[in-house]
Length: 111
Image (cartoon, rainbow, N blue to C red; front, side, top):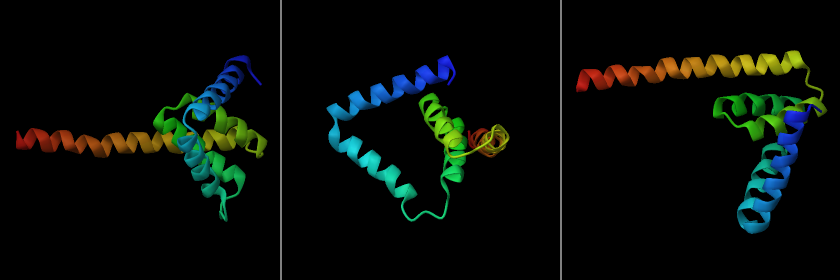
């Protein structure tokens, strides 16, 4: 594990552990949500993690990136598969910006 991202993941685990101790109901609920996404899932672990990586990119969550890249590698995801998932995230962000930009034109017309 590389130093920078390995340190981020270790720090994340420690910080989340501290948060979990101070707010057990929220931590339990969040953990339950994660468990629910895998329970009786038609997605295998690798596919689940590839989707999580793409979402992590679109939400700009470094903690999510460190956790889900690590999990994806453990689930057997290749660098190329992760690259493809990230490519989809990039395309979606560009598409979302393009579509949302129509609001600017609407605002201009209405103002």
